[in-house]
Image (tube, rainbow, N blue to C red; front, side, top):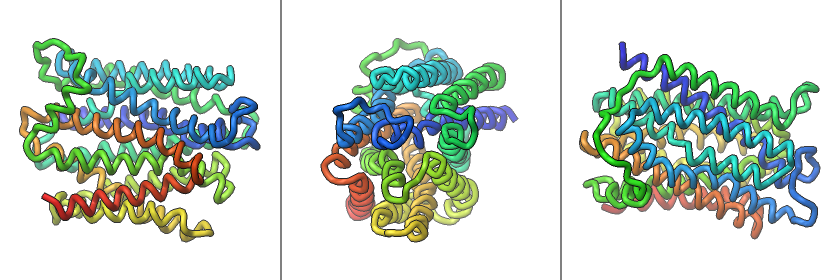
Amino acid sequence: MESSKTLRTLFLTVIAEVISFGILIPIVPLFFTEPSSSYFLLPEGLSINMGYILLGLLIGLYPLGQFIATPILGEVSDIYGRKTVIQLSITGTVISTLIFAYGIIAASIPILFLSRIINGLTGGLISVAQATIADVSSKDEKSKNFGLIGAAFGTGFILGPFLGGLLSSDLHPWFSATLPFYFAATLSTASLIYSRYKLDETSPMEEKKINWKKPLTQLKKGFQIPGLKKLFGVNFFYFSGFAFFTTFIPVYLVQKFNFTQFNTGNFFLYIGILVIFGQTILVPKIFAKYPEEKVMPITLFLTGLFIFLQPIPQSLIPFMAAVTLFSVNNSLTQIALNTLVSNNASEKDQGLALGTNQSVRALANAIPSMISGIAAALFTPAMPLTVAGILIMATATIYRYTN
């Protein structure tokens, strides 16, 4: 019962966190890449190509901050408690979201950048939630329980972009570019209060000093865990490709299919529904019959293939068919990778393995997000999607045929 209560609390907390993250997805591209939008903030004299670069930098700052801070927050959670760090992360989300809203009002790009830095440096919630799951789950339960958190992520990805698109649309006079961020800050505050009273502590509460060099030393130590170097490599290149996709798919939707921010929110609503379906319905059925090690290379390759195909269709229906197949395969891939990392680490190395995996993921999201803006500026907003597909397919092929 205690385990169920912890999982339920983590589920709701992760949903609130991902909503706060995802709520900006349909809106931010309008600030930098759409001169016809009333929300356009790019100063006169800067080209749209520079807007692409700024968009990539802004998106990349959050995971870069996570790369720096998440390992240290993991250390803090080992010493002072998982609950303490989860609450710290939620507080950072509240503050950074309010700063972002102020940046929109002030039409200040530096303030928007500052907000993302603060959010990234306090963004350890997902990693610590995974460590909490590892604390309370047996080996046989991990795949199912990671799937639950994956479903929470998917639910947040349903509601975040959808609410961002809705609350910033012109469907009601009260809706504006800042309203989604006020809503997100309110939701995160409620999550902070809820977790304060409902979340149980699962940390070993070790007596040790915080290693401030942990972002670098963790990577070095993590890659020395037997059997994980290859998986960490797969995670890095998979999430690198995924970062190219997520950074510029909203821009591509606007330019190719004339999507409004409300349309883009509905697009991510659709993807989120598919992720929940995959991680709650397909994951238990497929992984009960086939091991993650066999499934992952196949779904990883198909994930890349269906991203690669997305820029090819000239009409919406075949494009959405590719998006559908991408989303289902991607939902299986993420759970398989998380489970493989956890299952291939000993009990004493769980925190190190999961922390390293999160650091690898954060670094993979940061650098490619920034590079994707340059790729879009040099070519077209479709180029990051093409790069994403090729990179993920190559990763799956190399993983499958190398020891």
